[in-house]
Image 1 (spheres, helix red, strand yellow):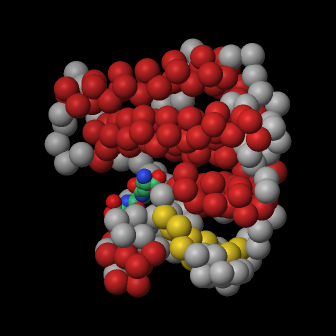
Image 2: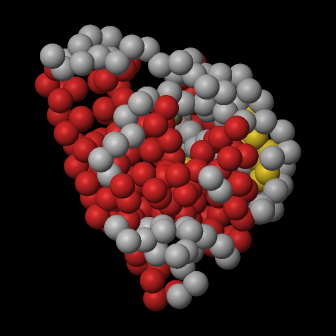
Image 3: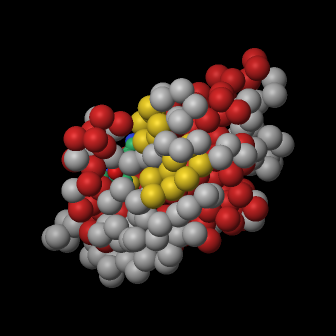
Length: 229
Ligand SMILES: N[C@@H](CCC(=O)N[C@@H](CS)C(=O)NCC(=O)O)C(=O)O
């Protein structure tokens, strides 16, 4: 990591950073694991989306929804937004973090879509209603707790008997699922009753690339957890 600013966003659950690849990229901190794993050179800076930086015209050019992460590749000027599109871009650019057996590529695609359509939205809503919502909405708290537990059960099944989602190979599928589980651990919500998930989580977290990226992110205190009843 060539440079990492440590200004903390106003959003307590997420440290927002801009990552520059060969001079010009934007990305979110946890996805920087892919940059560390691939060895692609990059620089990082803060884009404080929760204080309005995401709506600035120069950032909207990179990320139309005004959300992080987004990247600009200094090699060719390519810009990419959406974390899983970014992970695919970096994996394809580097030739790493995708299955060695090309006939298994669809397995990575399935997992990326599963993460983006299920884990991300359900875990995100759980965090919102359990910690940040201005009012306590018991139904929403229960609903997203249940949905998140369903995701945990799916992940447990997918990881049973395996080191990583693809078996022995670490891939971008592990990075994308890990990102939300890391926020989940910091919120004290990592499930205790999912042994395959827990063992995978510890395995991924102990990788030097992951340790390096996570150690650059300051601990951010969460508000008190809201309970449904
Ligand atoms: N589906 C998007 C979600 C990105 C996202 O929600 N980013 C949040 C930070 S974790 C954000 O930028 N929020 C600012 C906003 O919604 O204005 C992805 O995976 O890239």
